[in-house]
Length: 183
Length: 183
DNA sequence: CACTGATCTGACCGATCGGTCAGCTCTGAC
DNA sequence: GTCAGAGCTGACCGATCGGTCAGATCAGTG
Image (tube, rainbow over all chains, first blue to last red; front, side, top):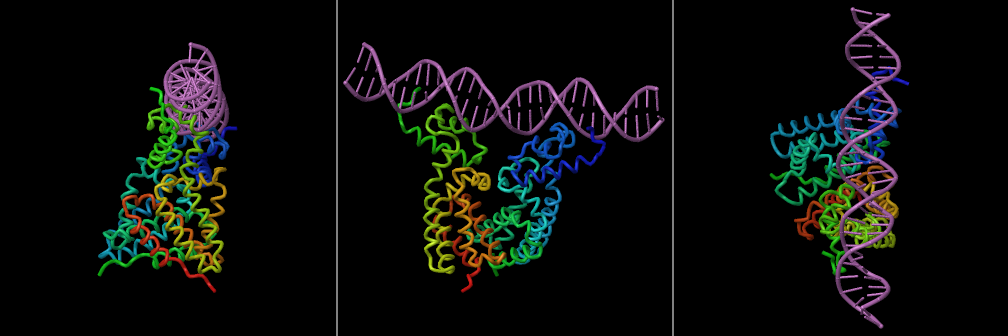
């Protein structure tokens, strides 16, 4: 019965990803994950300090890319370049990590308030400003927020669309919808 | 101590709306609502059959408008007219009921699967097809879904924006972003 | 006055949650 | 052969959840 394999850690991650995608983070219990893996709930908590640690590890790669996108946007010389980099970078992020993003489906607000994700909210703010181009205009901010939230909320549903096709469609949408920055 | 007023029903509804808006449907317990009202949890369940019944009653007006919009879309002679009616009707719905929609923030997927909201999902499907204009094209469907989800997810955050301004911004966004139907 | 029905309460229920803990088993090093 | 430690288990914990129930309170009616 006892597992001699130290790969349980990875199996738990994979099982958690499947369960989170199916029923959400809150809607998935540690027992659900344990059952999917075929081990006890205590075994899950042997490999991870707590439930949030599983989510944090699953999201780590996506968060790292988001953080580097934030840096790249800050390095741009002007709002026009920042908007272009933000749009392309965010679409790339959404397409590449749409599986991971889907795990958070419908739980962004709550999860972003957890201690481990506090800085994500600030990055999102800057991303919205960059996308808006003219963040002082309410309409521009509304546009950027709708598009950001819409892509984040739905990209996980397009698991069967090829990366290239999805990326092209989203980028075309952003180019049509976003308002160009001033001057 | 005992309330002689039969207006508790309304007070519970108002309190539930506040709590749902603050912490979401799942994140709000019957005890939370009772505390906000200043009565016992049992009193809440005296006025409502169960927790879902509170949400159902809160959402009833918005759902009724959504249903009538669905009918109006079906009555249109062609895809171009259907797209126009869908866009204008959905924006109007989102603006007028952005308070109610905010209650569902981040819980659409789970809540739509509850028995009382089963038909909403089918209406949403038809709304997306109408907005897409050319639903046979993947890119058009992606665009429509992103915009629909984005507006639904964010409109509750614009409580301080006047109806007119928010409606204009959203409608302008849809007109820029949606692809015209074939003919 | 007695009675009724609407309103509301506190105590309680079973289920489930995230998390803890003592201890078992097996493997590899010495 | 012995021992340490990694991996894992089942039993258990306190908290919280939605929901139930018997009964208290009170207004209105006759």
